[in-house]
Length: 318
Length: 227
Image (tube, rainbow over all chains, first blue to last red; front, side, top):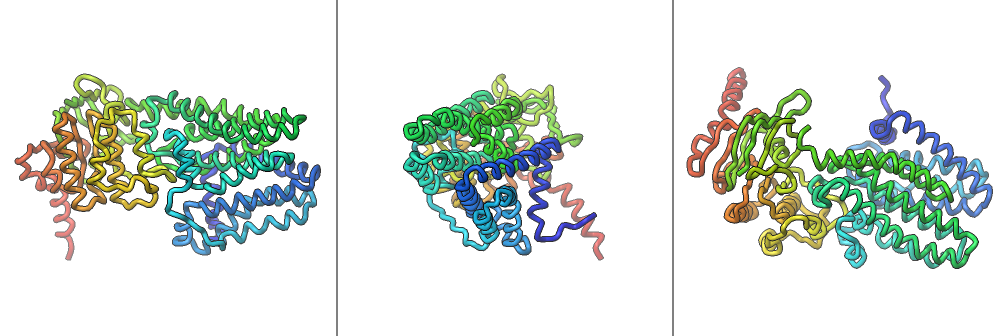
């Protein structure tokens, strides 16, 4: 039996988590999706060099946010040797597909920005104990507590992103990219599973729960994307169909996040592996016309989610 | 009255609860047993989960389950990023007849604060408030005293007595015998998944001896082998 060197302990753990959560065929699909992602990134940057800066910037922003919010930070510092190095390797693994895409497109300057992610574990993590965005969370229905949690974790950063998308809606692509990033942030909040008491208090049965969560998510996502997309269509009317398909893709993505959560729901657990599936779906959701991919994933997951919820609601006789 | 018939619960091949027939009358019932005796599994089964096929658990001839039961689970995990007040507002499907602000004046849970900032005791109190907020006919409290200070335990005793006065059936598990003896109308001894003895209020003299009889025998055997 081979022993994994200590610095790779976290990567080894992620691999075990992925194998437990996804069947071998799913891992092959994920690998394929990664190859496609690298190819798409390379294509996009070759087509328009300015995308390189957006992509590298978004990656830095995403990894920085992930580092600031990671739940196992104290655990790693207490119990893992070389915790910063271990985290740096994890971030490097996350950044690798983007780095490859940029290198293949010969975007050397943008590619040089990517290794900065390795320095994030040495950046101090700032955590506040106060309630964030009180005025905003009051407007969110209590049964969509994932969205309240999203406000807590991303406010005011998320709001600033949305305002930036709104004020820059006259630019091509950038507002869509910012919306996509907000969408990915929101989907990420659907990885935590509520305790059973909260699940049973949310709705009287499985169908009602999935319906409440799905309709709520569709409404809120529409409120987020619609103003920006209308603004973008006013300035680029010829791209109305791109905006329409993008909006549908974002809605499909958030519904997939909700469905995926309940198809794998285990009380009190964090479904980290869902993140990988959502990231794959998010790549397709940003490409016009390919939002059907999250929709197809949704069709397969919905039955699974209902079955799992039926079991959680009606396990009277095993 | 809760009526149990042919209730069995198992994890794989291992039978954890086996109660052929039992009745819990309206009032406060304590369930005591050592670790692994099946206390939490029994409460889960009353809540509607993990029962064997053919088991019948009824409340006044109607099926008993999570729709007419409030359950404060032993594990105090809460969804991250929400406040105590937001958590309680989720429990609006019940009658909500409980005077929650009044009870919280006693328990002093900071409902405007994030649950992640609560102490263990505060989390326990919030879970109890959630169960009370549902105002169901049956209330299951799994280790409610864990993490509570003496004052909070005293308040909990008063709250439980009030629930019984309002016609609720309350089942409490605990490792702490003192408060259970003070508040319960009956205390049931659970051993290897079966209710072996019940003790009426005021007649609990043999409870501790019965609970620890087997343990004391095994302990003295092991310690007796020491040189």
